[in-house]
Length: 294
Image (cartoon, rainbow, N blue to C red; front, side):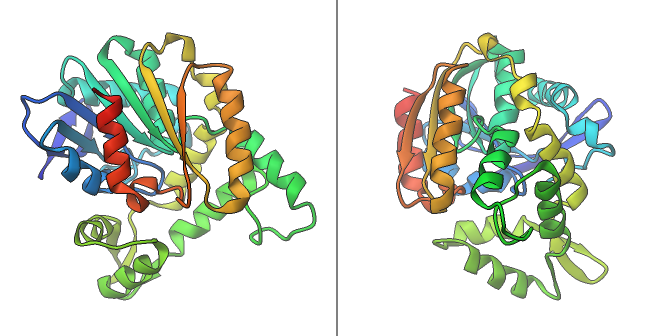
């Protein structure tokens, strides 16, 4: 794995790559709260066949945050990605994208359809913020805020601001121990990826992304059905989605039905799998990616 920074215009992005540059290329887009290294296991499995490039989106990992919430909006963020990929992308490439990164990747594919060959979305791209919130508002009418999934844009912003800004530890070791409890499995490569989730500040170890970044991203996720122009996307798309937690499967499938009305995609459900699919099932994900990109 090779790590480097790319300067473009007034910005700088943190990037890593695996594999031989002469191979076909895959560009990876991570989700909210993740970093470029979230793809580490899948990249290790694919690096003999592909040149894999993953980068930290704004406000994540080692890439500087945007100052204003609106800069995380579709227009500005897409322009940022277009400018970065002019530097790190080949003439054409495939895309693997997770969660928020899937929405960002689809906006890129609509903006630069001639650049993108095929796409694999990992439980993302289909997300409809308001539909999601309304579903849980109906399901959990009487629950207190924080005791159920977010039921509005405001609740979702509060959830992520607290989740990111209050995740503070005295040492890297205690941070790692907390993270270990959050995942269904563990490996030396995942541990390397988790170290990338840390930021040291005021003699404390904190989450790499801030609540301010999360707020900008969540606002973007509530606009994607208005900002995405799916008719401009020319790529074959495979959406892999998951069934955990149990109370999310129905709303995932309802959103996917809506999404399919706007864009032609192939879907596959992963059973007993959580939202961070490529950490739960790296071998299967890599296999599906290889098969789809043939």
